[in-house]
Image 1 (cartoon, rainbow, N blue to C red):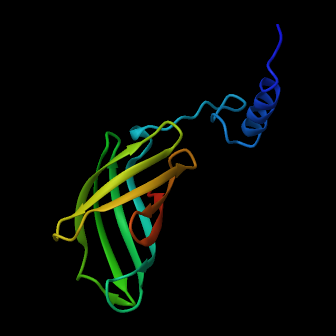
Image 2 (cartoon, helix red, strand yellow):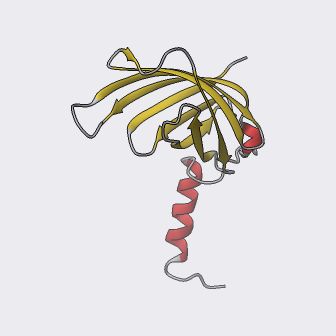
Length: 150
């Protein structure tokens, strides 16, 4: 069997990608793959970044959230945030939403606050076998780190 002139470089690149962890998540008996069930239970989030309103300068965002994932693609949340140190709302703001986790542990979520403010669309990465989540909010310069609460 004769390999094409492109087969050897492609196979070599694939081997390097797997060794570097860019390929499938299979190593030494670890066949970990993610799904919606990977996120179940309560996760505490630290939220940081900047909001760029249509007028005025950027606003420094700091916040915390407690998000409950049901393992089936639904979530509920309460959060509290400050803009430049001033509370954006009083107390805890409730929200609900959905999420979808891919086999490669990337995913998306949409969170809809109950106070009528616009929905938040997030991209996320689940890691540490589902114990941690990193997010970035589409459309602004904010993100968060969530850790499963025991």
